[in-house]
Each structure stands twice: as C-alpha cells, then as structure tokens.
Length: 391
Ligand SMILES: Cc1cc2nc3c(=O)[nH]c(=O)nc-3n(C[C@H](O)[C@H](O)[C@H](O)COP(=O)(O)OP(=O)(O)OC[C@H]3O[C@@H](n4cnc5c(N)ncnc54)[C@H](O)[C@@H]3O)c2cc1C
Image 1 (cartoon, protein in one colour):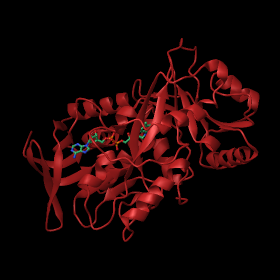
Image 2 (cartoon, helix red, strand yellow):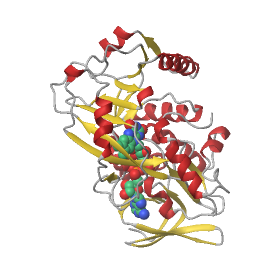
Image 3 (cartoon, protein in one colour):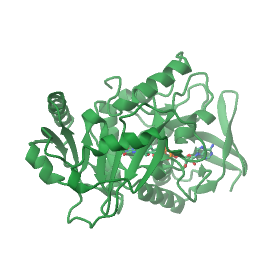
Image 4 (tube, helix red, strand yellow):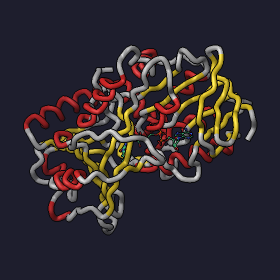
C-alpha cells in the first residue's frame, strides 16, 4: 500500500469495481486505490443479488443507465444471460398498465412485444399460469451474474495498475473545503479525490450539510429445489400487480417478493440480515402465482439487504461542499456499469448529460428532515419499479 494516491474508491462492490475498471482504462499514469473491508468475499448487496435486469424504467435516466450497463455486461464472458424478461398481467388494470408500458418502452427505443396468454405460458411454462391476461416481453433483458462481473472488473482494474486494498475506511479526511484522503484500519492514505461507493453503508461515511437518505431494507429471496436444466433458460417473470418476480437460475428457480410491509434494516457486517418470520407468509403468497405442477418450494431462503431512496433514484455525483469528494450510492446492478461511466465523466471533467446530473444529484434532498425522507424511501418499497418523479 502506498501512502498517497490520486484517487481512492471506497467500496469494491459492482459499482466501485466498475468505476475502478473504467478509470484504469482511460486515465494514464494516475495512481488509483480500490479499498474494501472484504476484498476476499463479496459481503455487500452485490454478493446477494439474483441479478434480474429489466432495462425499461419509467425514469428515462434509469432506462438509459440500464441500456449502457447491459451493453457493458454482455462484453463479459458469463456476465449476462440475455434470456429476456416477461411482465405478466392478471387483472384488467394490469393489462392497461402493461399496454402503457409497452408504448413508452417502445418510444424509449427498447425492443418490446405484447404477448397473448398462451404465448406467455409457452415462453415460461414452469413460471406462468393460465390465469394471465396479457404479457409484455422484453427480448433484450436478462440476468446479470453480479459476482462474475465484479470479479472481472476488479481483476481488470488490478492488471491495469489499480491497487486493491483490504481495509476498513473509518473516516474521510478533509481540510479547507477539500478532501485530502481517508483514514483506514491499515493506516492513513492521502488522496486528491475520494469516491464513496459503499452501498447500504454509505450514510456511515457521509456526514454532510445535506442528508444522504440511503435506507437499507430487508428483502426476501428464495431458491427452489434443483431440477434438470432446460434446453433454453426461461425469461425472468415479473407480476407487477403482485410485486413478485421469479427467474430460472438454470438448475433451480428463484423467487423474490416486495409484497410485504417495508422493513428498515441497520447496515451491519454483511448485506444479509436475519430472516423475519413474516417473510414465510410473503413467500407462501408469492408462490401461488407459479403453476402448481412446478412444485416450487423454498430450498434455501435469505433476507438480502439493499438501499432505497425517497425517489427510487440513486445518489451519484460530487459533494459541492468538499472539493474532490464524490458519492455513488443506492445503485442497482441494473444501472451499475452505466453509473460508473457517468461518474468517470464527472471525475475526468468531461461534459455530462445535464438531466442525468440533476436527477442523480446527491444534494437533491437538501433542507429535508431525515425522518420524513426515511419514511418516503420505505413507502416506495412496494412500488420498487416506479420512480416518484418522471425523470
Ligand atoms: C436480495 C437482493 C436482491 C436484489 N435484486 C436485484 C436485482 O434483481 N437487480 C438489480 O439490479 N439489483 C438487485 N439488488 C440490488 C443490488 O444488488 C445493489 O443495489 C448493488 O449490488 C449495490 O452495489 P454497490 O457496489 O453499490 O454496493 P455493495 O455491493 O453493497 O458494495 C459496497 C461495498 O462497500 C464495502 N464497504 C462498506 N463500508 C466500507 C468501509 N467503511 N470501508 C471499506 N469498505 C466498505 C462493503 O464491504 C461492500 O463490499 C438486489 C440486492 C439484494 C440484496
């Protein structure tokens, strides 16, 4: 470990690792360090994400970041499975919503197709029941292998000279309105710029003159029993009216649900929390959406923790009161590589899209009180795929 770097990135989950990789490919001669308290295992949300990637979002900014991310993930061997995505409606309102989503997704330039009930069942017979009324199919969507992608970025960055350091960062050092390094359990490190990419732990290092409402929440996910692999993996399936999703992991199915009272979590050692007893009922209800003959029952289940924000958008950008300090928090796997590109542009003084900068501006909650922001973030949980503002 050197005592001085040009840039320190704190957090080597998918976001910090993608940024380190991107910067190492284009910034010659810069000394970059990527620091994480658990380099050897992925203890953050990235390590638990099932990797469901739906590119279309009601927020144009998020759609764009997702499109850019998928473009990058598909370049990585084993990084992304283009299995497609299927949104299924089981009610009249659901049908109307899918039609509207189809129209706007098409306008956004994404390939999208409305399918009748039988077509939807044929596409994923083990996941879609005959009670579906209409489905919206996204052929370009799929599943990211977040562990594989992160390992690829870390290794690529390391080969290009980025130093990976296993240490706990306890403080961001600053003086006279400028960042000047970090304090770590392995010693102090000087740095002209620092990026905080610590996921659910972001608020712990970010004590600014404006709130960082990154709220860790509990989320149930389960894996079914092993089955023989099919000739072709099924697309992921989402039931938007029921806030449930499922995917084919190849030799077993997985299923997650947002259909429960939001539960705030404290960010502890890993992004895996205790299993709240009520999650058993949540999964039981969700499993009723899957055809009975699939016999999908929990073989393994866990409470994975990720971040929510009051407007369901990440916080990405510079901290104006501390020159040289940047943050990238509450970023999904779906948007990570695109976000890293955006951040690289900011860090290297390139022109960025003004709409994106404004939408992701980490100072946008300035003046708001923490309690109401936390409540707004939790309120958005059951409507995870909808952003509050149309940006
Ligand atoms: C169950 C579950 C399901 C999900 N499903 C999906 C999905 O289907 N699609 C999708 O797009 N996203 C999904 N997500 C969300 C996604 O996983 C996260 O948003 C994303 O992985 C966050 O990446 P990150 O790099 O910002 O944070 P993380 O992966 O959490 O990485 C942060 C890193 O910072 C390190 N760190 C923290 N504090 C410090 C410190 N002080 N010093 C040193 N190191 C520190 C941690 O060790 C960690 O490695 C899911 C998440 C979970 C848990």
